[in-house]
Length: 126
Image 1 (tube, one colour):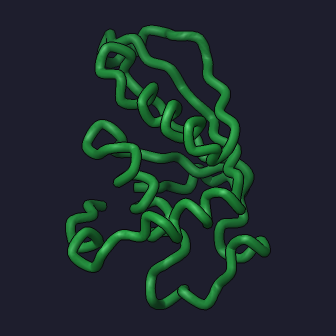
Image 2 (cartoon, helix red, strand yellow; image 1 turned 180 degrees about the vertical axis):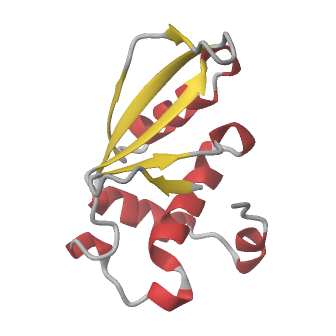
């Protein structure tokens, strides 16, 4: 779900069209932080999640990226900036790119309150 962009300061979120904002945020946090083999890392102290931004994009008419942005802002999980809408020459879809500056403290608290069950984790797709 999250990918390196060969830039240590930015990661890309993929797959937002296939899940709710809550499920996406659960999976992002779990993939980056909460897996058993890395569970001892405290990312709030610049441990594992040591990049500054997460980028995501979406097709305007499908509205999933806008919903994700709204969820981030409503839950005070950080700041989000967005580009102007442009037409993707590959698909002719109108798209927009967003950049999320993570509020680490709030995101960690949010995850503590919304931690997925083992059954929910089994449903994560990669």
